[in-house]
Length: 324
Image (tube, rainbow, N blue to C red):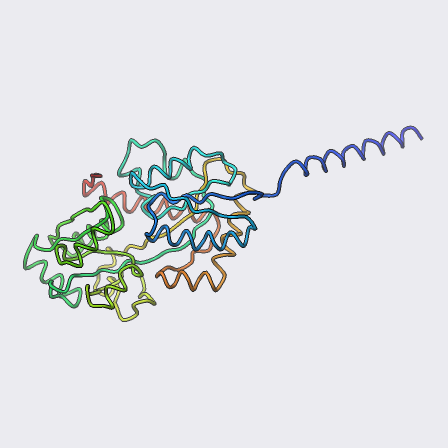
């Protein structure tokens, strides 16, 4: 009898201990989550981050706050997340330029792959290749003919050395064997002002950002840079259609956490993000921005970053591209 009582007491003790442990482990998330954008408000990264944050707030039942920490080509915001506790409450919303940071800044304090926990892919977006009407080109072949006839006459703009805009122009220059000059700017506002005024002849930029200017005739769209035509500008050909597939480039967006985020939290976040991206309302909002949802497991983040780091790192090294 005493042995039975002892066994019962031990069993009750184990259950009580397990129940106590569960009670002390809160269900994630139990408070607000910070989604850090390492760039100023208003750009494509910020806008798409806010679309995701709104959906996640509903899906997770906790507020997801977008926090802009711009500066140093995204390194300030990224480093903030690297140093944050790995509890899933501080995340980084990163664009494709994240992959090439180490190639441009070899002495920076963190590694874009090694020092982050991959959480989820979010979206991808092609760029549009536009020219000022004064150039006179209405097609890609016409543009290339003008560029070859006047080496160094045409200048293309970007928002900084090593950005997707810069790399797209660099690869076009090499692939098409044309001499066009790169002019880096420190902000998108100044770039567009000079492009619209004709002080800069051409650039690559987000489709949705440039679309209003194309529709008003202030700039002329020549092609999109993705592997297929964009639903926003279905009449525009791809660079692939002119045998310039080597110059294809797509922007993408991912969510990362600090190293050490527990697998159970990674899976919770990944599942929630995928549900948000699969919702028709989210797909519709992203489509209006020229973006396409990227649903997938955390491993897809690693593949995306590693592939772009290898591809564009080679372009950066061969072109001896250095930050300003």
